[in-house]
Length: 132
Length: 405
Ligand SMILES: Cc1ncc(COP(=O)(O)O)c(C=O)c1O
Image (cartoon, rainbow over all chains, first blue to last red; front, side, top):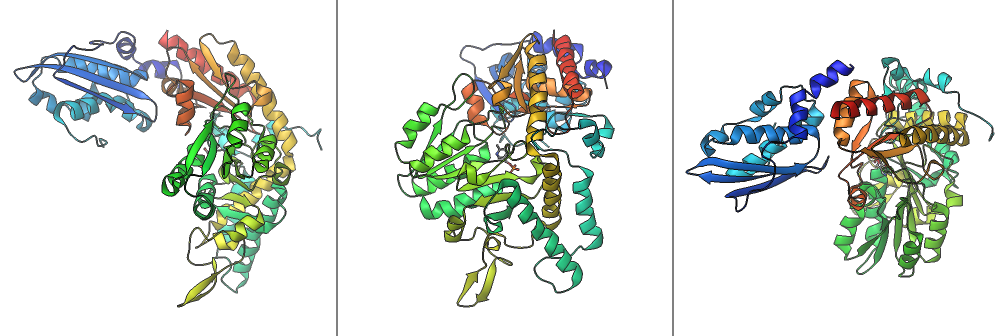
């Protein structure tokens, strides 16, 4: 229950992504830009995409919130860079949670999946329904 | 009476949940329930489970007597004039919706003003927003000052505009602020307004006297005062309740039903349609007994001691911001934030140490916006809270700071 469990939950590299987010900031004149929030805890994540021949050539995210939401967004941008939109479409909930590599309680799952929602709604216009 | 004190160690023996080892710091959300309450409910289920008001056999009479006995206990607890003024609801939310529907639709019209406050819970905002939109009325919100207390100067200005309704909470669940309710009610009544006081956070924690308070309506929830979920109270002054139409319609709230029309039951049953939360109401009665035995002055004194202790311990933590007034002017609620650590991350880390802490907007998003934060962490206390639990919270905070350093 104590320190070991904490450290497992807030793994070093999640904290690292939280404190030193990759691809953080904004793009000028992005091809796609979209933002979502989670009003319950006030998490916000937005992403800017630059596309070249259907491939994500550059990407930035911005936002604020808990470590889980921000680290998850940072991890996702690393994964997305260089992928085609078609490939990006295949990324699902399990991929995102797998990448975080920790047990997420039901109460925090929305935080972990906020960045995926930004991708889904922003990049290919899926309705912002809640992922089961 | 006033010198009674709380024996926390003895009290905790009545709450089996503490054997799990949790530090429970979320009583403003919902309280724990003692064996006396769950026992009263269990007795109903096992010994006289039946429907009330409808059957002629003995166990149904017993159920009816116990169910109705809660009304007198609650009446005495808040010093209402009559049990006819005590309406059972599912909780504060339903009680406020009842007033918004049954009183509001008859009395609020085009261009009328409703005065609320920025400290209010969503359940004392949204029903009025819906009513205002429907009737073409408008709403003004009393702001807070830098200490987290309502701006009485602004309230006085709003009263000059002759509001039809003034509704506010006696104690803020998000910051713990105790509002000067007696003065506010008196001023609002003088200005001609009908006044509803949301007592969800005051009834469990301090003595309440609705007649001294002078309000027209007063709402609270059993589950925040050692009772079960699903049972709460609307107090209403009799003449207002008499003049109101029913909220829900169906069985039990009628006197006679004919094809040509229906006559309604007398108060308070006019507002209690359908089969009621019988076990829960009986449980609420046991909770009121429990609190009455402790004495509400003693309850308040204990919480003040814990709150002062927590306030002091937390003031010493670097990077910690406390919201709201000093302990003497707040209930057992401490809302705070930590630099660089989101409240949800803190709550998750605290949970690893079995410390139950609330993180979020506390159903007070207008207040969060006003404070310029998305969420805060909140620790709240009750009759069973001991200092050791506050110490565990402070350890969790320091642990979070170590992890996020
Ligand atoms: C001040 C206040 N008002 C109203 C409510 C709503 O109570 P309930 O959810 O029991 O209806 C609460 C509970 O969170 C509260 O703290």
